[in-house]
Length: 332
Image 1 (tube, one colour):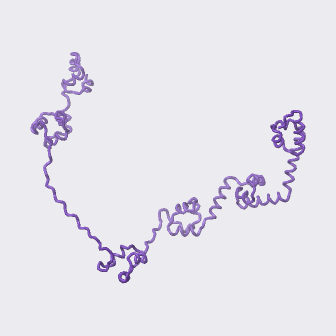
Image 2: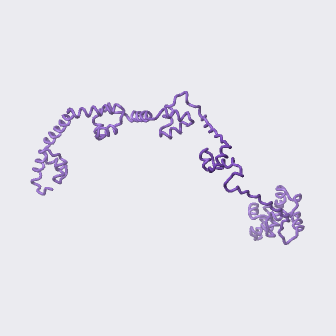
């Protein structure tokens, strides 16, 4: 970095006139590019820019540059993308773009269609048709070759396309006929069942089924005897719950109008325990229970208000008239 501020302008102009750019001069002297521009006359900067443009135009007319531009245009028109052209010629993508006229560049839609077409041309059409005739679907082939199903569809002739939903079932593989006499003869000669199974392409159990028990050299099959029948247990009467009152008393209370739930609540048992002690013929229907449990029509709003004026609470009134607190409040 130059510390002498008086010598700095002369040094900047000298380095600039020697051919160094504004950025190079600023980097060497440790100043900003704006400082370099202030100390370089404007006419000199304009002359340097014009000279740079002229050098660029002159370079474009050189044989090497013309040959490179011709190669870029030829490869790009053949269908290569700019990235592949740059990799082939070992130049940057920006250099490829600069050597193509705007009228020669493809749009994004054209580039996408070209990429799809080139990818489809690399697909093995004969192999695709063979797999399709064997039973593979178009969607499965698309997943196999990592392309869209419509790309696979264009590679298959129209007369071979199956109707939707009709996929030929694979033919069952014919079962190999086994010669039982040959298997028995070779087994008697000393060959093992595993060797015979491997040669005939079957399981060892299939070979074992064709060899008599008298000729079998292995461990005899163990026959598991069936388990003895379980003895039938005599049916015993179910132990009924003992209640503090007899069944006759429960039936009498039920006939008097008490509900099974009320009786069960008094005895501290489940409602079904009470119902099991009441004959089916005497059980009340749902409608009969509603009519029986409906409050007496004589209790009206005037009666409830009279009890209320005596100082009774809603809970006391409900207990006296035999209704719920909610019903007493609604009627009062």
